[in-house]
Image (cartoon, rainbow, N blue to C red):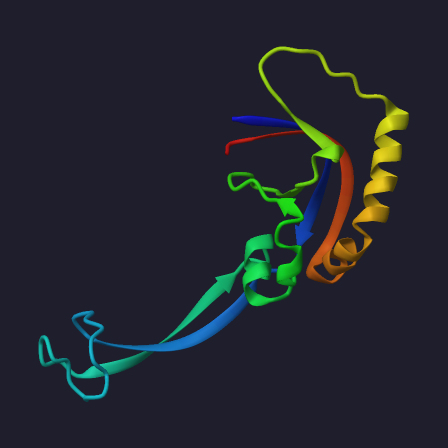
Length: 147
């Protein structure tokens, strides 16, 4: 378990996209050579099936499909096991990992100043998020997650 205190981005992905594709197999489920009309394993006729996959617009999917350019890949960390789309800056001047013990103070003026500075420094990245996500917020607070 990890606990982070600092700037983070909470994003709301665009709606789920559906992608359709065709694949071939025999009635027994074998998926071997399709250049023939019949399965080489069992002799059954090969049929074409249509499928629809739902693709979530998550940070990793958008990196893979080019929606978010690769140049931004290392700008933020995306904890894997959160239901929300939370992005944590990799630049540790904007936050700290909290370990056992200790007291941490959060001053309102500091958090407001940090958010402004972050938005200025990451403005190009935030413009990409404008088009990639339905909406997002830059926040200052605690993120508790599995790593």
